[in-house]
Structures are given as C-alpha cells and as structure tokens.
Amino acid sequence: SIPVLPLQPDGTIPQLGLGTWKSDPGVVYEAVREAIRIGYRHLDCAYAYDNEAEIGQALADAIAAGEVTRSELFITSKLWNAYHHPESVGPILAESLKRLQLDYLDLYLMHWPIAFEKGVGFPKAGEEFVSLEALPLIDTWRAMEACVDAGQAWHIGVSNFSVKKIKSLLAEARITPCNNQVEMHPYLQQEALVAFCHQAGIQVTAYSPLGSADRPEFLKSQNEPALLSHPEILAIAEAHSASPAQVVLAWNLARGVVVIPKSANPQRLAENFAAAKLTLSGEEMATLAKLDKHFRFIDGHFWEMAGSPYTRENLWDE
Ligand code: A2P
Image (cartoon, rainbow, N blue to C red):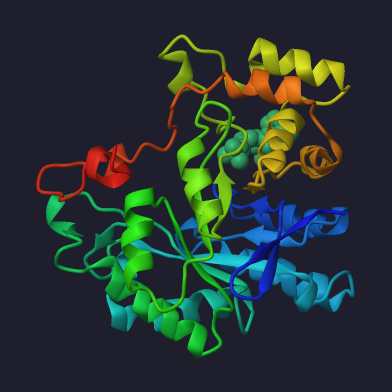
C-alpha cells in the first residue's frame, strides 16, 4: 500500500494520489472509479478544473458500492484566484463540497498567490487582476483558517508559493500551512524549496510529476528530450524492468515528496500506483539529481499582460 506522511497539525497524507487537472468531463468519472479499484485513496481536485461534479459522482458511487469509505479517502480541492476576497472563501469552498458531494475536505489549498476580481474565470485584460497590496494573501488565508474552524476543511495549505511567500505567511498565520503544491520533476527539482518546507514541517506535493507528458512542444522548442524519453531515465527504468514514469515518481517519493500523477488510462493508473514499490539506488538518485534544468512547464506567463500586477519574477520571487 501507499506510505503516508504526517500532515500538521495532527493528520496524514497518502504520498501518492491521483491528479485530475486536464481530466476531461466524460472521462474523469471512469478514471476515478478505476483508480479507487486499483487502491488510490488520495485525489487532487480543484474548483478551476471544472470537473468536480463528475468526480463527486464517482466518489458517491464508489462509496455506495462499498468499495471505499469517506474516512479512507483523502480529498484535496483548491481555492480559485477569483475568490480570494475573504467573504468569497467560505461560499466557494461550500460550492466545491457540493459538487464533490462531500461534507468536508481533507485539504484545501490556495491555488495561486494571485488574485482576480470577483467572478473572473481566466483574465483577458490586466484590469481583471487584483494586486496583493490591495488584497493581501494573509487576508485570504485568515478566511481559509475560518473554514477549518467551521469544519469545511480539515487542513489548509498553499500552491505555487515561493519560500519568500511562505515565510511571510508563516509570520502572520494562526494555522500553519501544512502543504505547498508546486510543479516538481527531475527537470525542476527545487531542492531549496523542498528543504525549507520540510524543515518547517510543510509537506511538498509535486504537480506535473511526469514532466507534463502531454506538453512536449515546450521542450522541443529547446531541443531537449521529453522527460520520459531522457536516455538516463530510460536506462534506469530498464535496469528495474520499470517504466520511465515509475522512475521519476519513485525519485520524488524517495525525496519525501507527495506525487499526484494524472492519468485517465487504466493501464497507466496501475503503472503509476505501482511506482510506490520501486526503490532506486543512491547512485541512480545521484544520476537523476544531475538532470535539473530549472525548467517550468507551468511558468506563469499567462498571468503577465499589460496592466497586470503579476510577473514571472514577482510570482516565483526569483
Ligand atoms: P493519460 O491520461 O492518457 O495517461 P502530469 O501529471 O505530469 O501532468 O502528466 C500527465 C500526462 O501524462 C497525461 O497526458 C497522461 O496521459 C500522461 N501519463 C500519465 N501516466 C503516464 C505514464 N505512466 N506514462 C506515460 N504517460 C503518462
């Protein structure tokens, strides 16, 4: 079975879960049902993925079929950028719960350290953003703390936060963020961020842990092999009779990082789940450590536009 890691203040998080971003309506229902049959208990969702209702139906049906109980599941959702206004946070979390057919979340994350005007889906003009000076992250965080008090979420955390932004939140928060979910794979290893978070008792979750296998065009433009076709990763996979996906997942698991690979394919769901059984040697870990390219697939360029207060520099603080 899948190992669990401690989650502040008094919980645990399964170290491998199912990602649901880009899982299309009409497909994600069966993916979730199959994942639960395979043994997945941790599901990573978000309001913005626009598929929570279908996931909720799959969870309700799996529970009704006796395949799993609510308490065995670990369900995450995320607060979208258009709901950072403190009075919006509780109601939009309630909407995610309704769609997911749940009465609490195990974990609620602030999706981005970025705020929009109320109700904006994806901004097309700079005026649709709200700056962090006008709507500070701590104000949104306090409203998330109130969701814990209300029993809507058992744990709260952040996503796409730099060390600098976590530090400033830590200085003012009543409830410590227990998790930071960021892009992480051998091309974007973020050793300093992982070390800081772990030392602060914050679990790190890797999104796009397979190097966003569905977005190869980003690397082609740089003449780099797609992560899952990198020769060194292929060689390690072959040595273990494993797949390249299993190698990169096992690498993050060995670093104490939570992984949430997305798949809608039964074979790949099973393959990814089995990565928890793969142990890499110290030498293989060292080989993988050398592949870092500081390469972001999700670099935040889509928040940069005329009139937007957000840039890649002030988003990642680097
Ligand atoms: P599919 O859903 O058809 O399996 P990431 O989580 O890094 O964003 O990667 C998700 C992408 O990787 C999806 O396109 C998914 O496609 C694909 N994928 C998932 N599991 C594997 C695997 N074991 N091997 C290769 N590709 C995979």
